[in-house]
Image 1 (tube, rainbow, N blue to C red):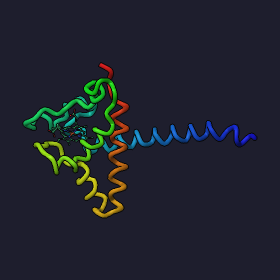
Image 2: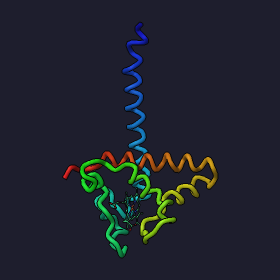
Image 3: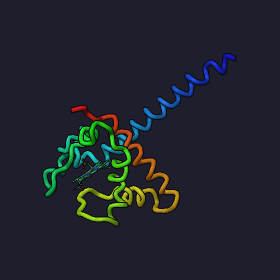
Length: 132
Ligand code: HEC
């Protein structure tokens, strides 16, 4: 009885801790790979932004630009970028799917690590969205 009563809150707590860890992880990955262009606070004002020929987007406004709902699937695909190579258009942002894959060793197992890293980034960006 006792254990059953505590199981659910413990599961919830475990889930919260896990997502808090993922967010912290995402922030670290962000600072290492993205802040140079997108800026420390993701406002699109990193030091490298000044030398690019295209504007670097403000990543705090992804929800605002998507009618108030964080477009997580889209964000995941944009960061990954591997799909876009096959379609069209110039892309100034590195293709993180390939980049992370190479860094992880470039084999089948590396793919899992790539998806996890990108998910951490997607989750982190979700936490910094503004409402206006
Ligand atoms: C070399 C500079 C550079 C780096 C580093 C960079 N980006 Fe970008 N990012 C851009 C530019 C420029 C765009 C606009 C689209 C384009 O031109 O490719 C963009 C677009 C985006 C978008 C789409 C936003 C929108 O509103 O259209 C997301 C999401 C994004 N970047 C996330 C990231 C993440 C996450 C990282 C780190 C893993 C990262 N970027 C690293 C330059 C960069």
